[in-house]
Image (cartoon, rainbow, N blue to C red; front, top):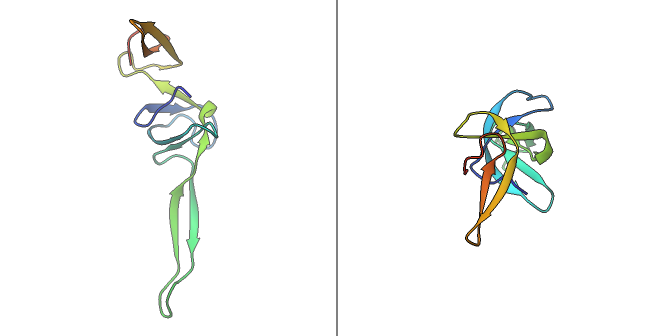
Length: 101
């Protein structure tokens, strides 16, 4: 998967379409990502002890990696990520401005 933890992405589909955020975690086997403040669900928690109150906590849930586009830090555009191999090293590059990411 070409998206990694710490990348800034633009959501291109779903209820949060058009928002930008940072990737918190990348789940490569499932091809899903966990994005900060995007795709937030509410989790209801039962009280553990008597007299304690239950809670509703917002929890970010994973979303498919195909629903976001990478935001290039150099040109600032939403783009795809490519790879370039030089001197037996593999670099990620922006497909629009060809700069190293």
